Length: 301
Picture 1 (cartoon, rainbow, N blue to C red):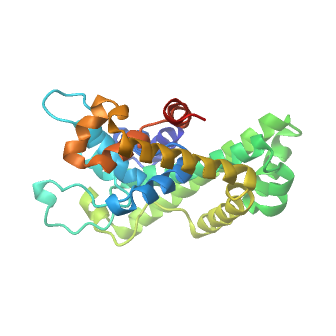
Picture 2 (cartoon, rainbow, N blue to C red):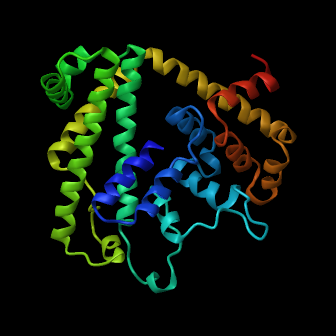
């Protein structure tokens, strides 16, 4: 929801199609597996000889195949531009006839905005989670992350001493605002410099036009490296990820031996898409909690 809200704000500032941007933002993670990126890696390994697993590709499967809202066809009947925006690491959908001869290197500006909004939200929430869990501290961030320290000092000078929860929440909100302003200003310059006059001219550009400034990109890379070192690879975080991969693997192999335990809708996919892909679809649709409950029900603790 926050990705969609941030994406829509950027789209409004750039005078883009806000509804399209919001739709892409809302749909971009529909295919994400349980247990986040650890679950994605586990499913990709389980599906290694069956076509692999990638959550953006899975989002397309959800909206084009797995959802059944119309009697005459599967999927959600989304526009080509929306499907294009949900495609990140895979082949884009077949373009309309008038675009079929063009060589596209990028997606629409709306899709590029949603992609960057996802990155802004992702790292902001990880900072928030790290602070709430105690795995990160404001003192650490003040010492090690330049733009955190800058925002912290700015807020202290404007508002004085705030309560801990209010202060760290507001710092993160200010970091998001700073990134949004940076993206809007940089992108406006990129669009003007490229001289594009249509959506398809945007798609034929060699590089995305929606971007951070070089300084902001460098700052974000610093934050990314810091989070990997101090949060993502922390044993407290990493050990549950190992457990998550084990649960998914054991459920996957159970369903291979007992596909009837998946339910009728997923069993119906087997004849068209193969047993392993149907199992992957079933697991990818689960929440973290449901994986644990299903594992307990079928295999015991």
